[in-house]
Length: 176
Image (cartoon, rainbow, N blue to C red; front, side, top):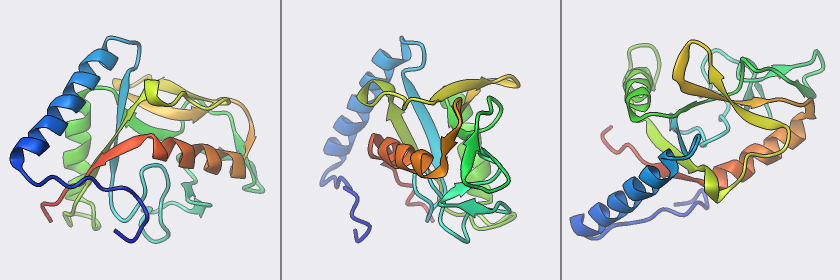
């Protein structure tokens, strides 16, 4: 792949099954902890934690972050603390599955289906950066925001999100 990211290739169904079994076991262990594993749906060509221009929906982008996902000051240089905004993550498989179906249905525009990848973050592999936290959505116990809880410069948020993306594994949707 030309994007410089590691992609694991499986030569047999057995190798793929072993990788899935390992991920399931890691998830079971982590699930016993408070958060453990968090999942995120990523619609290509977007990255696991940032968006590409033209693929972010109706939102304005600031260095790959959508206004709407985070709260900015009027200069768009500072990200303000907001417990009701942040990148969306799923805690449960059922929430992940329903989100995946919905985003996949509209991946290429309204009612235009396309691929939707699933990214996972095993929280033990990388701690949540200072000034950020997972905040439970008050409307849905299985939906969390990766929120900014301390005012930070946009460059710091972008750095944090890039670090987080390196800790995430992505299962690619190859159906479309």
